[in-house]
Image (cartoon, rainbow, N blue to C red; front, side, top):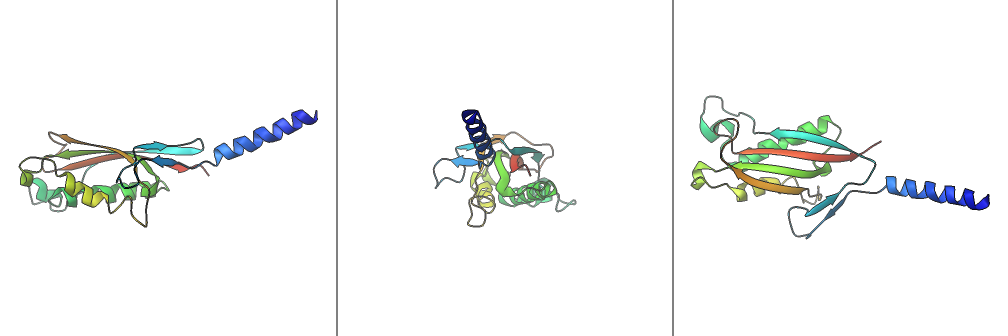
Length: 162
């Protein structure tokens, strides 16, 4: 009987320890992205659909309608994602996976402006204030839903269940 009670206590302790695990982000610490992210039990997942930049000048055409270059449009998209996560009680620190779609920038001979996207990205991830980095994929696509949009980003976030 004592062995059974000890076993029950041990199993409860293990269950509590598993529930209190943290998200693990792996890979090269110098990299701006995580090569792997593991989300343990006890977290809820938040899926944020692909968001595009906000219109900043409805009278303009092309990229200028959405703020101009890839960096500016990425800042707009990441800010929109941040606001969406906040409405769900989460933050950018909770992002575990990101998919970035870039259109070739007319100002860059039709090539995606990866460097511009990264400049904006690094203001949200891997900073002293917010060191967490998501796993990520970045791809160039032919076009997005509206001409002039250069960036669309979707994310998945995970936050501890309370």
